[in-house]
Length: 297
Image (cartoon, rainbow, N blue to C red; front, side, top):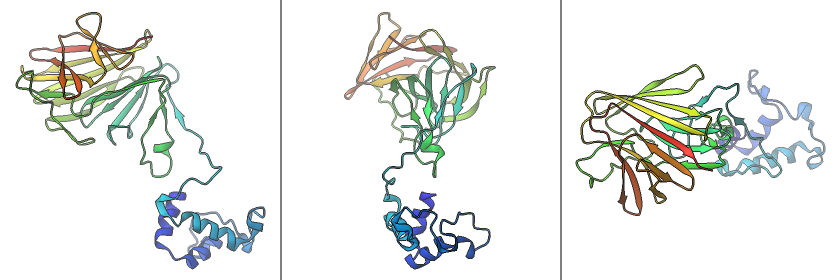
């Protein structure tokens, strides 16, 4: 494992490193590591004339920069692609861009996918095309992000999706990325017969179920949020935010990005916030709300 060896090289002496690689098992019989120089002879006589000393020294020089060591020239890891099959959705609880380690990805058979932020209880991104490439989180220490295999990708704003605003001019609360927003409690999810999730969480005393179901037509995803409890007049949903946000052809549709259309069952409005626009939907008194996310041709 190159990452383990780079960490090892940070704290080991060069002479010991040579001795260890020549015969790992002599230091401990249970060491799980192949010996590439059995009986002092290299298994690769075509590299550096088969000289074990030169070969091990080359490994040391490569690993000496520690975590700054780059992938050796000519070595290209194979991608690890993941996606739905057999008519069922797939889910992946790993790190996504802009979400952090509490990300949950959903890939739908219809060819539309999204990520959900369990820390802030929001949709993080939506994309059309294949689901995900996994090598960044399934190799090494898994510290990188899942890569969306997107033909078209739209990212939603960071920060919580729900907030209590005193009036239309109140600023949206700012929360650092990957930090749990105050007032939220994520309570997991349930899956239907084809593995599509309904998320459960609470905000400001209101219990919320958030179902995200795909449709083959479009393709599109319909999000249905049900509220149990006293939904105050101050509670607002931020459905989208960015520079490329405008009203659609009907009063309850909005275009976000180059080709995503949001159609909302409740009245929403667009306001300017700095250099961006925000699509806000007041929720006071509502028992449920639907949002359809559809990529236009």
